[in-house]
Amino acid sequence: MPLARDQDVIQALAPQCPDTSRTPIVPNNGGANENLNGLVREYCPKGKSLAHVNQLRASLIAMDLNRRPRKRLDFHTPARIFAMLSKIPESRVLYRMR
Image (cartoon, rainbow, N blue to C red):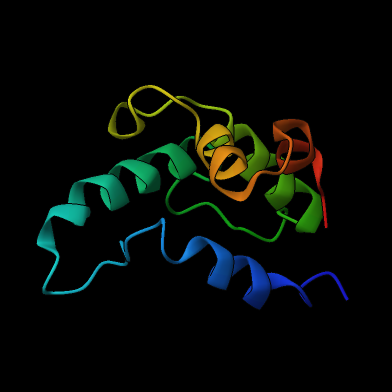
């Protein structure tokens, strides 16, 4: 089961990662969310059918987005930050497809 260890990873990272889900209490996350939406729109323009986006294509889009440096992460990539916090080699983070 590919997701069997997700809870273990979440519990291991919880002390190091603040909850950044977008809630009315945390309005400053709106900009990051809107920025990510804009990045996703480069691959899936608004109004275009998503019927052509299969799991492989979605995984490739996610992998590409996770390789892009983010100002909010001090110009590190999300994959690098996740790899540093989880102590998983970055190459495994980027290329895991399932």
